Length: 156
Image 1 (tube, rainbow, N blue to C red):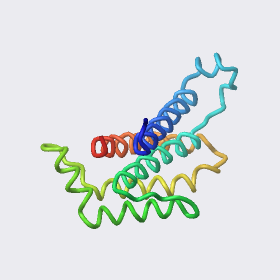
Image 2: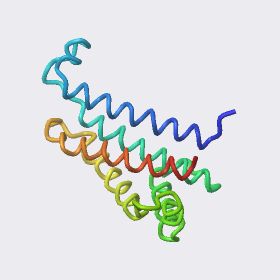
Image 3: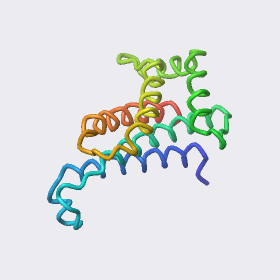
């Protein structure tokens, strides 16, 4: 039987895959053509949203593994607050230190990534000028890759 942590990490991986796929569709004319999508149509707002959800589900997986089940209402804010608390307590830093012997990712960076992507999800999900979101979409993919990779190494 698959654990809740595994299910959440799988969801994080699925969201990351969707972010990358939407980025490719937005950037590659041949893919658009094969899917019958107009050449000027982009999905950068979706990239940002899926990258955020990848981070969100990874954070929930981490917290669930620590015995903290978080649900609605206010699930996103509660997850962010609980993850931030673990960082302030030094727990995440210690776990990352145990994993990375030479190249250490500080837990504060993960909280900053989570906070940034949470804000961007709200700011850019409904932005009608999608082309303006290109650099933010790429940053979101990079952030989601870094965050989920660090959490995956902690929880598994």
